[in-house]
Image 1 (cartoon, rainbow, N blue to C red):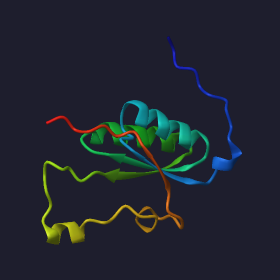
Image 2: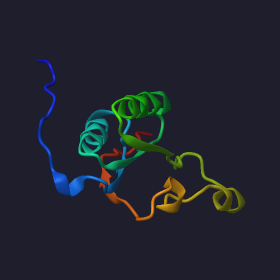
Image 3: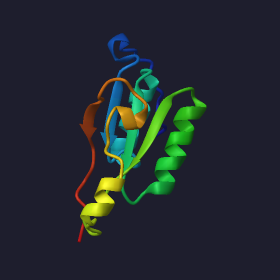
Image 4: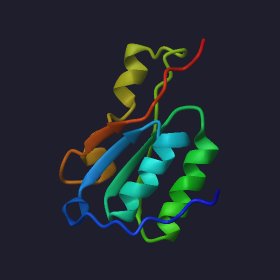
Amino acid sequence: MPVQESTLTIPDLAGKAVLVTGGSTGIGAALVSAYAAQDCRVGLHYNASAEKAEALAAEVRDKGGEVFLVRAISPSRPMSRASSRRRPAISAASMGWSTMPAACSAASPTAR
């Protein structure tokens, strides 16, 4: 069954910043696309699916949306205290936004 484009418009979302964890695949990717279609500024948080995240970000940008990629810190690769200080925190400022985004979690735990 083909995916139907939504014609729903929610004016209150336009211009809002949203961070979607697990945003590169599945439900998270659908949420990224849906928020972008509502003219939200979207933080697309991903872990292992870098290529899918970059492809989705390009698709959002091609449609005129604003998206910022945020790579997850993998729990399987613990960071030293020094390297964690060098890694930028997810913040409004790090995404170039003046307000902290709302968060929407679609991330699933990584299987071990």
